[in-house]
Length: 253
Image (cartoon, rainbow, N blue to C red; front, side):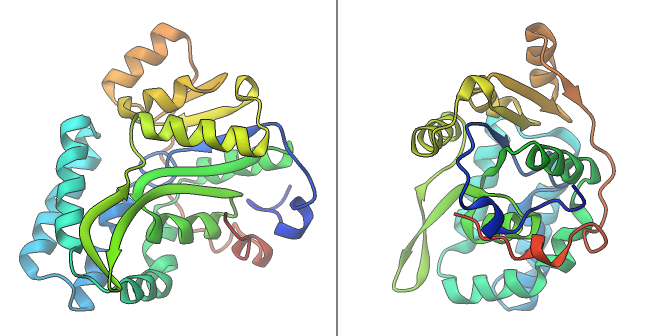
């Protein structure tokens, strides 16, 4: 198969019993997607210089140390506080306009190859992330995946109110996988899951074929004990030369 994704029309009439569930940050892309758009948000007048510095520091910690429960909670609090009062339409516009410049250079080549391999085998591919749907859904479309599950911010009068309607994290990721399996008819014993973080242990344990990708220390220990495969992704590259036009237009559900 020559492209990461397949046209939606070619896959819409099939019902696959197997899916591959991919975490996003440090599994498919090399950084935190929740913080990747800090600069364009600053340029759009949504955040001040202090917030930019705070986000850069959070990004550095995430990259160097991984994401345990305490760090994820600090990151969640920072992002929800930062986003309070932002117009939803403006965020969607900024993400759409800057997506390829911001995210394309962060995508691991190994991840796109793995996604392509699963789709060539007739598997559905699902991107599942604790980051906001406004960012994860366009990234999923760019990658040509079949479905996306992500956190949803509560909206009041067209603006984010600083609360989460759904936090796609920890056990909630496993719940989302089981819900999709029930809806789509997936056999979870035959499904695959990929993640870097010990916080995604419920997601990995929910399927028959879990794999640790760039695992933090705690997940590496769990994977080694359980005999799970461990992969190292270290080649973030632009997608422009890797995706066909049809792959960029795949709809996500």
